[in-house]
Length: 75
Image 1 (cartoon, rainbow, N blue to C red):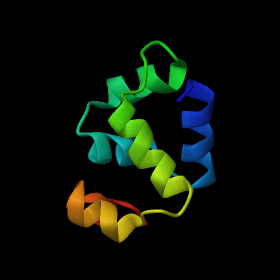
Image 2 (tube, one colour; image 1 turned 180 degrees about the vertical axis):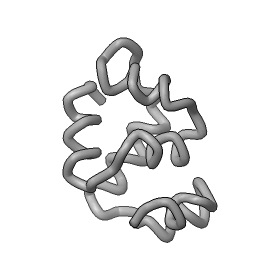
Image 3 (cartoon, rainbow, N blue to C red; image 1 turned 60 degrees about the horizontal axis):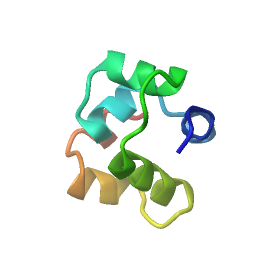
Image 4 (spheres, rainbow, N blue to C red; image 1 turned 120 degrees about the horizontal axis):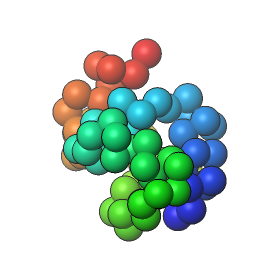
């Protein structure tokens, strides 16, 4: 996944760095480096975001299997 694809998914789903931090269990700075293209987006993160973007998984699934706190922080 390219930085542009990553940003497009974030914009499309109204996600902020904090949302990605919760999903990927990384720092704000790491998410920023992915958005800027300074570092490659890990395949697992790309797969989760792609599955979410294409409707294969939803926020409740992410909350249950990936990060328990996500839905409480997305409003």
